[in-house]
Length: 251
Image (tube, rainbow, N blue to C red):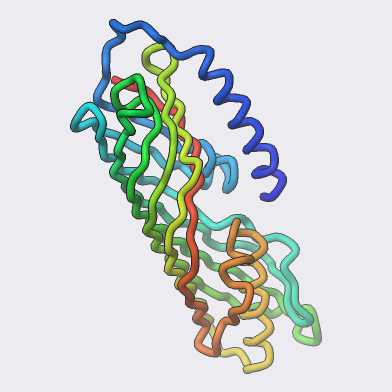
């Protein structure tokens, strides 16, 4: 994940420079009021088959618009997550979805184009829900036996974003949400599908936290000083963020 982010940022910057050279500066260019788009950065982070989120933006005035995004999402695949007594046998289920919305104010004094082209700022809200089921194999004296766990992970984030949307060759859009600080509400819940003694249960809960913090971007910071309690709950409120690259089509 870190390598993807490391390479994604300079690629976006290079693309932005390229876009500046390709923007149609014709004064007679038609101003489209609708954009459909695809969340490219989410797909790069989580996988193109597991993160498929599309959005729609509607311009309501020369310098304002609103947008909504919705699609499927899932937690990254767990590999090499082991404890003293258990190892991950397989992911039985990985599913989820993301819904978000924002309201954009395109800065008239900073932009020479009307919305949806140019620099914008505005509030946003995002909700993500993830479901997972894991089969754990015993590695000790009970080899051949297994334990199943189910998990639900909800993330609500509200904040303010700053971004820039390019319109290339009249129709192609590149939307960069560059800065998106906010407040995130995180609620993770794990349950066991069979009886497990307290010691083994604690091992698996610790492994589940390891999986979330190591495989999910940003969660190592959010849950750094938190532990899953005896009821399988990991809950906190922390600083959230938003960084997105969309590609789309104006019409």
